[in-house]
Image (cartoon, rainbow, N blue to C red; front, side, top):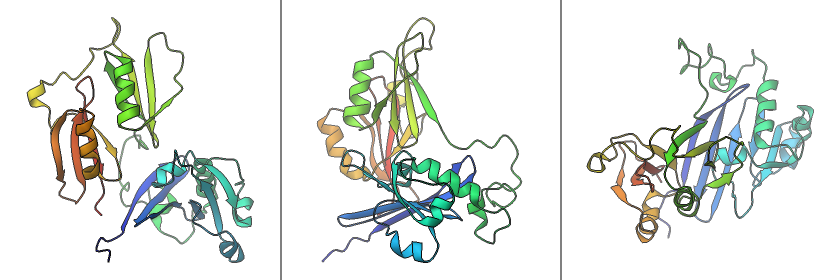
Amino acid sequence: MIDILPRTTHRELQFENGTAIGMSHRWEKGQYCSILTAAGIVGCGIYDLKTPAEFGQAIAIAKGTPACPLTEPEDLLDATIVGTTPKAESLGIHAGMTGREAVELMLKATPVGQDSDPVLKGGQDRNPILRGAKGIHVKSIDHNTLVVKDLEASRRFYVDVLGMREVPRPAFSFAGLWFQAGVTQIHLILEFPGSGPAGNLVPPEKRSARTHHVAFLVDDAVAVVPRLKAQGVPIVADVKPRPDGYMQVFVTDPDGHVIELCSPPK
């Protein structure tokens, strides 16, 4: 008998044309994710197209791969759309485009006056979180830049340990590497006379969960600890629960930058 509850999470995702809700659901040997807009859904292959087509719903499904499974809503953004309902097609969505492009078209098609969840419409006046906010309204963290001493050592950490993907980097006049995790990138710059100093300027004895750090979402922060230790990754704060139930563990990369790995409540 399984006595572990399935896990479901949701969060707001910001796009050029508004705000959507990203959802992830997990259970024993099963999972699915989706991005919900007021006009329709972009989801993984678990969704059926025949039934929603009969009800005139806009559904677009993407397909993952063993190397890049669709488990979190952010995974859908770079995935390829492989199927759509007629309603989704009427919005300009078609097979071959990315999940991000499909979501943007759904958000663009949402009438401003439509009677639906105000958060899904993405407007400042209708979003209780943004209402009354001033400023330029940034949408998300695009990337974090770190200066390092050894690109190969950093590549081994970010690719072999963390499992990020190395992605193409523009032809800068200085050396570096770019890595992708979901919609967020890590940009590395190899230390040179024109850069800032490599590494963490915080003394080793002061590096902890309560200092400058970069946080990544993982499936299970508890389960990754044995692997981190086996690979000799320095752990500066062992796995522990956050007040909201998230589990978190803090490590350092080869240059001493503090990295948090966290996972949602199960």
